[in-house]
Image 1 (cartoon, rainbow, N blue to C red):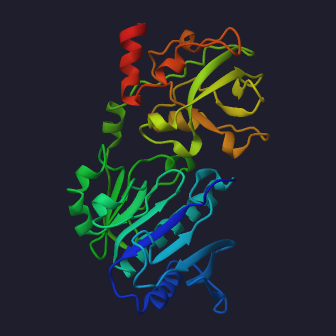
Image 2: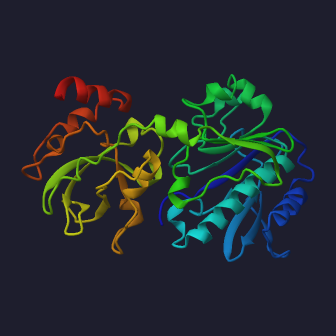
Image 3: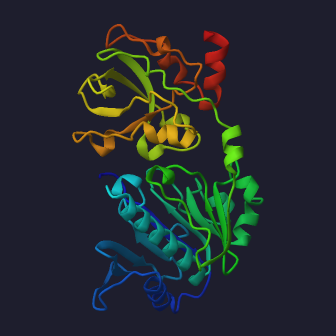
Length: 349
């Protein structure tokens, strides 16, 4: 799996005198191990390699009191382990993700962090670039830990996100851990714990009844197509899956329905996504179904999901009579995603 690795970053105002020792004690408590002799210094960074079962993680300390604001005291490279596609075994992925989440929370308490994001730099640029935090973070991470003072800088938790976060929890030291949305985590069947020993209380934002009531009425406009038909899909890469798609993430993809009723790119026959014939019952599951049956020849970097899922979208809107034809989809790519539904309803129906 290519692309930038996932990162944890820990920003703290505490004394740095015992950071390394405190970190070692904490990751051992979280079930991680290391070779005592596997420590080194490279270009001023203190490096430790730790492991969880057979998985390797790189820990990097910057203990320079005059470090740049963007430099965290501690960073941990997680590879691609937080991505649901990392493991073919569901139980293994659930264990991996829970161990990483637990390490994030435990270290945030130990290091008395102001801010600790878990993110993919390509997806969310969540480094701190200065002070105060509210003016120095370009994008909040999908998952992160915040001190009460930093949350106050943003005007409170409600002001930080467009909608209530999917999961919030209070850690033992009063820090707040926030997971913004259920995607991509539910794609792998994982959700944060509500009974872990390192947190005081935890809540999910919506009950099943609320989620059901707020469904958007999704449908796949490609479900009515026959094998060999070509169309234009408006997609986002798998790593950009979210409860709301951002306009800058949208990509126009010319596709053909193959013999397995999957969508493949016209120009090179690479797999894009599955067609969803039947509504599985909720919006998150609908997105998951688009990549539920990935063929052996599919490349991870080619996987995408469609943004054209409103039930009102007719298959004719994505029609192509020739691979080089134009249809309505390129026209809506210039719109913000918030305006897409209204555009389609006002001008096409």
